[in-house]
Structure formats: structure tokens, C-alpha cells
Length: 150
Image 1: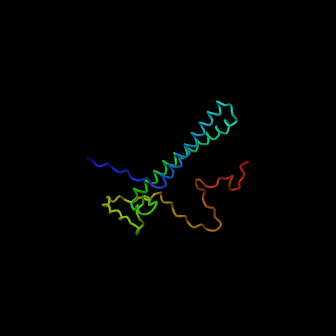
Image 2: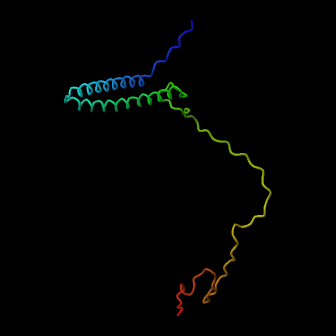
Image 3: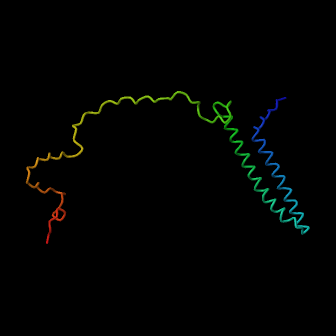
């Protein structure tokens, strides 16, 4: 006779989330039954029962989401590298910093003649006192220099 496989026990936070969801679902079902019976009897309890039913549906959905999230957190904790610590995470324990190896040297390329990145400007000649430098392209025109053109 083959042995039956035992199911693992759910983690505590998942079990509490499931219990909370069952209680919320029971509250919602009671609200639905009270709303149905009070609608048949034309009772004043129909309005509070409908509000309780709406809150119960919202709460039940909230609890179902909580179950899904707590199961994911528990599964991540089980798969963690050092799962003995609570909320171990998926990172390796911190140790000394790991340095990358420097890249290997590439063989040198054939040498090309070095050209300057821009054309060399001629060196400015020292000016004698009392002389005007010659105009150069891109410099101030007659209007900018203060001359009138009329």
C-alpha cells in the first residue's frame, strides 16, 4: 500500500489570513440571508443588511488578496538562500567587496599619424603701442565698434 504524502502545514500568517477570510465570508453570507428575508417581510432591517453585505463583500475580497500576498511572502521566505532568518530575502550575505578583474590589454592598433583635433591658430604678434590691429573675420563690425554708417 503506497504511503500517503503529508501536506505541509501552512505558515502562521497564511493560516490567520485564511481564518479571517472565512469569518468575513460568513459575515457576508449572514448579511445576504438577512437582506433576503427582510426584503420579503418589508422590514426596516433591509437597508442595514444591504450595507453589511456590501462591507462583507469588500472585506472578503480584501482577505482573499491578503491570503495571496501572505502565501507569496511565505514561499519567498522558504526559497531564500539563508532561510533560517525571518524574511531572509534573496540576497547573498554581505561579505568583503568583490572587485572585478581589470580588462585584458588589447593588442595595439597600427599607429596612425596624429593630427590635431582642430587647425592650429597662428600665434598673435605683439602689438606696438599706438597701432590698430587689422580687422579679422568674425570680429566686431563698424557698428559694434562705435562707428556710424550714415
